[in-house]
Length: 414
Image (cartoon, rainbow, N blue to C red; front, top):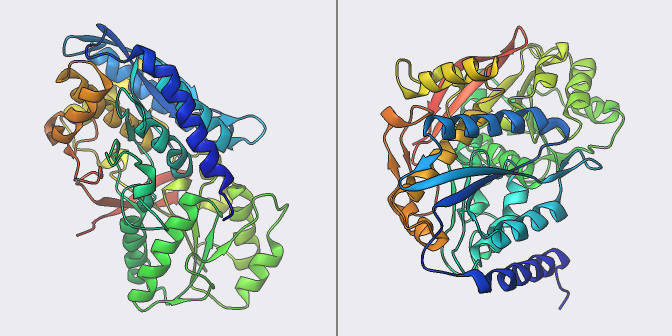
């Protein structure tokens, strides 16, 4: 039987991490603990990651760097490389090993990319002092927590314990809401593209499935549409082919980092404005100033797996957090994902405050996290189901107008 090299590598790294930590296993913790972030700090996601780290540091400052009886410090990990300009498989695996080996570190906030999470989670899951908790502010691929691809989600939890959580909802919900909104716009024929990565294929598949159920004609082949080449110098051939099919909309499942700028430019160049042929993307295109600055982005629709910042409740903790972020850093958060990063950290800190400070007990306390909306930095309750998914299923629809993400509608998926 042919072995999967990636799977072998993950198992090997997990074993190495385990061997490094066996000598330091204990039933009690030091009074100073570290939480960490694991984000792509280079390439197109750099600004968003920097803003997320700022939000976490602000939250810690507001809490006087305390969680219960513990003093909390913060450590940043970069899961991207300069050569790739985005998250990197090998770097994600290396970071996972480092998290487990760091004796003073108790939980991870991350990752941004679902593909990276699928590498890190199994390694943290096998931590002999844990499992080690990871809470994501941005992963939306359903397979991390639900039945989706082959062997998912069980293959990410070798111990059988669910150590992974997320504060945004999943792409099955995002795809369903996006398809519902597309139909409300009068779309009858849609062509679906994906970036050929875990996240992009997942959300494109969810949109495709939902669109067909709603009676839309999906012009693209395959369960997730057609993959685009992120190394292409232009997409003339792709959009010329699509134009001949006369779609009402092009739906793009993916992240802006993967040559999204050229894709957006060429869509308008060869298919016409985003009014003539509608254009829609998921949250992998939100929070990117370079995208919003493109003239060709005007009129494009976006979906976000939570509330957009301007829809956070007014007059409470969520608004106060935004105000203090602006006061502290002289600018607003880059995207909603940045504040959801603080929400993910808030969840971790809640579990730490009720624990004895060990990874094992912090994991145990995650089952009873229940932060009410009135105390949440995103203004919605932070509580998880048995799979580790946030209970809230809000999807925000946005449109690019005057180079900003502008609220259109909130859809709550039942």
